[in-house]
Length: 143
Length: 145
Image 1 (tube, rainbow over the protein chains, first blue to last red):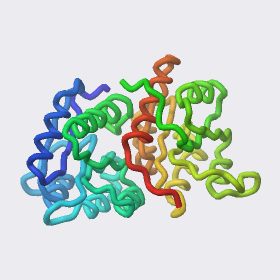
Image 2: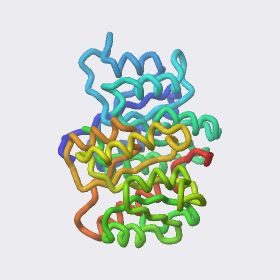
Image 3: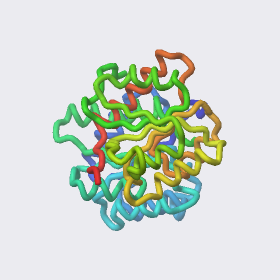
Image 4: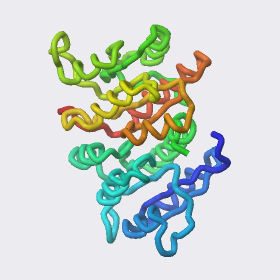
């Protein structure tokens, strides 16, 4: 990685999930800066750098929950992946859903991958660590 | 990192241009089924079950050894990712190039992930194992159509 810090955008409304995901990501060795937005509308403002998000960095990786207030995560994904400027940003779906229809629809809309939040806390932490290992350690991101 | 063999019985479709890559990837895949095709047009024939591929298995994961500065390789990736029958199958691009331009190109054509092939053989095996572990053991994959 040539960039000093990876920019991660976490789009997640549940405070418990936000705490757990940011905590687990910050345990990893890759230098990163994590910004959090709690609803789909704020996510779109952030990605388009509108309003209070003027001047934010373009994320190198997005971690997106599907069930979000105001604007649904599915709509955020669709908007990201049909926008010529934003579509190259890899989007990791991290959802409580394991519904085949949600999984298929996410890949159809070009989500980069789909992960289901485990119920077990240790498994959940391990999965978030695996996101870091793979997406920030193995994969070449468009930075 | 993960060194265990990935989930058994997964179907992987691999486009590889060189025997070296096939050997490395087969070493890394353990018990999974790896179907190897060696030319770009054959990947589409495989997915469409045309000609000699009429009984081809639907892959869980597609690994494409591509050179994104080559128009045919870009065309292949975009055809896979635009086809309603198989656009949802995750495609991991394996490439020698580390150029930003090629990496952006791959993501703009909707590659699911881009991996720069390490020149060190053991590191290459490790990266492929990590890829298989992530996609086959951790990620939720779409049901096969």
